[in-house]
Length: 123
Ligand SMILES: [Cu+2]
Image (tube, rainbow, N blue to C red):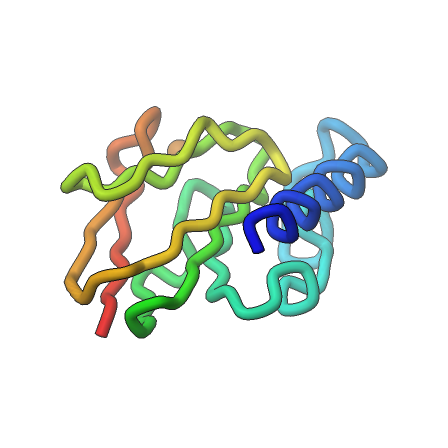
């Protein structure tokens, strides 16, 4: 399953390369002009766009996956405040997937931009 997700992320990277480098990310274009449900089947997707996690709060069940997709040109991370997970720096068009194996309320932030905050609630 992990290999499948990596392949999907690589696919998006290749797709992103087709777009102009300096094209700003917008709702109708940019690096995330894809069908997220198709690209990440079975994952709840959080889009990072305009230095905001969207949606800012997601509710999932134990065992579910959450995928963050960076639709900005600037790099971002998904970093749990409590250290439960930490993505690498995500370049434009890159994604990161985390499986949640325990219930809880997990606030997280972006390492280079600490003002970017959101949360995952696992029920
Ligand atoms: Cu950031």
